Length: 141
Image (cartoon, rainbow, N blue to C red; front, side):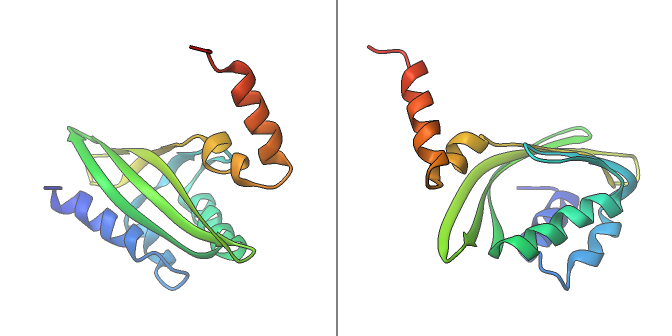
């Protein structure tokens, strides 16, 4: 069972919307770092812009958490990110490593997910190329 702090973060992400986005300042330190396969930014305002872009460029984005591993000041969360793009639904599976300071604020957020498998491979044209590359480098047994 997650600690109350981690549950608060999971609840915020599960209900994340443009109207709840301003609450990010109560969860992330002002100089927090964020990195995912597409972005690397510093500062809670820059992190908020990533989520603003998410809402502007996807349809009905939402996070569903699967597992939680807590150890000291670090937490690893596995999740599914559900969203629509041009009328088609997608699911990206990934994980987030969060580091907290003594005040319980997130200072480092690193997302891990395979952009090729989870996103590019599902897109027309690009997906064909990624699938071909995946097949080319796969060990034949």
